[in-house]
Length: 153
Length: 343
Image 1 (tube, rainbow over the protein chains, first blue to last red):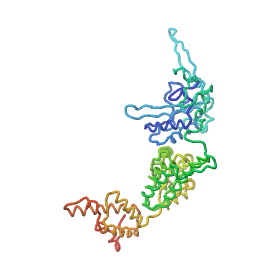
Image 2: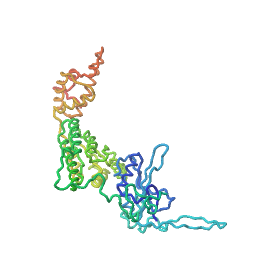
Image 3: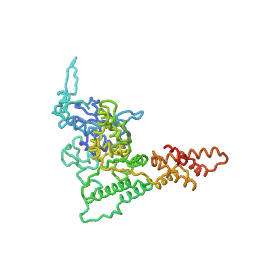
Image 4: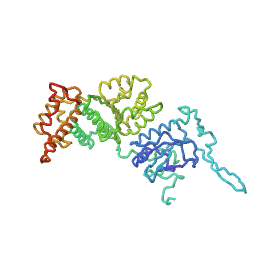
């Protein structure tokens, strides 16, 4: 099941040229671009791990594309997104966020039904990928990664 | 949802603007359906026997206007102008080659400026970004000017992020590393400068088309720096030596400076100033254009003192004119026999 989070997620995956163009737009607006990654696709998982620091003061999308490429090389089977933060007073929020990398196969979610008191039923969403420990989801263990270890960004 | 007249939507995928409706194809494997057509603005290659009129090229005209401006703004500096002219010509030829469907890779434009103090290394470097952007080599052309302390960290693990941060800010433009030889301190083997140099080399190689690195510094120390970092020397394609200015060039520079400050020399003062520069050139610690700028600053001081002590009515012309006595008061003239003037 294709995860749809953030902007452009109903479109086909963006090409690198299109990503660079979007980043260029964000830079023009004065937003700080950052790269984040995760392997927990749950929709309520909003705080992804940061790949380096947000890039304040860059002038050209090439800098952000460099980080995206590096992050993809290290975590080829993770979700990677680019966020743009608008630091203006009164806004101070993420202005743009879109996925730039996703695992080859996305198994999707299961609906867990839990019976509680008075025959009430609660539902929760469970990503199949989350059955595996972090770093070993999406068919590839962290031992296969080029740098051998995880979490050193 | 969309009106019924639209092409049948593929699941939730939205049609791309400009893209033809994917005819029954699966939405993910599309790759670049719209990109399959020839790139917009890039017509089919010319036939091999076609001829292109160089003078009619709009870019050629822009470049020649740019080079004219360069000639007007900078006095002397023939090697620099030659190199810029070559780069401009290469970029133009590359574009023509592209029209014929020939391959053209982007040249590496990392540079090293060496020369005596005050020969305009930093000044030229600050203009280089703008110049290369107008030539169509760089996308943004911003200048990020750094020295050792902007690149090298203070503790273990601090240097790499710091250097990368600076390099990212400079992408799309020019990174000017002034006095680059301070990056490498051979006397301290634990110095973090080496780490910074390694990252610099890596990015200079991998992002040749995104970034132009310019190292500037004095020739002799730069030589030592390159001898201990051979990788750096070979990755820099353009080593440009800035020659010392001649007397005539220095006077021309002085004229430009005075004009910018809205001053003028009286005819007698001009003569005296030429004598002054000739004397000053023979003295130690002469720093070319920088010495001229300092001399002009001192002329302004003396002119101001003369006007204030003189009192009376002062016209606009008096405020602008520097007289011969202002120039002759310099210690350089007295020092013909005695102590040399400073700076």
